[in-house]
Length: 133
Image 1 (spheres, one colour):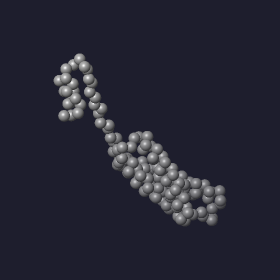
Image 2 (tube, rainbow, N blue to C red):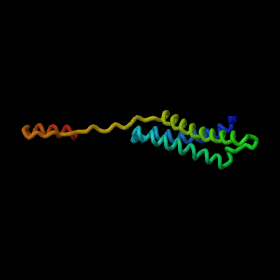
Image 3 (cartoon, rainbow, N blue to C red):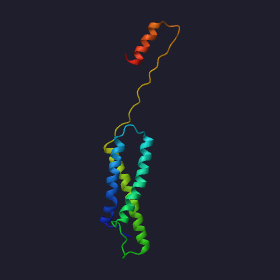
Image 4 (cartoon, rainbow, N blue to C red):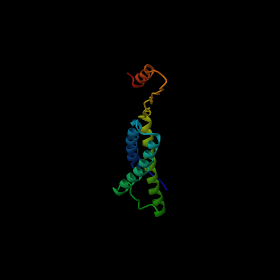
């Protein structure tokens, strides 16, 4: 079973470009947690790679060759699907790495403790410090 360089290019390049775009967007979003980024990457990589491979196969870019036995042809098409999925994951990884933004840090939680035994001056000072005024 052989895959020509053109088959690999046709199957891999669209996945790489879509993955790069998604990775670029994911890497730039500060509001997403690590878990969210991981699951979005997993979902887009798998589903996007399969959809791209199906589109390429149905439009005739990835075609079955008549000179190859059917079992080798099935293995070749399966490898093309796998290549499409892998290049989508690779594109997401490269895009996210090139445009990675650190997570947004949550603002500090401020609190005021009220002790009825203390005088009002101390409470007012704590209140001013907590509100920044």
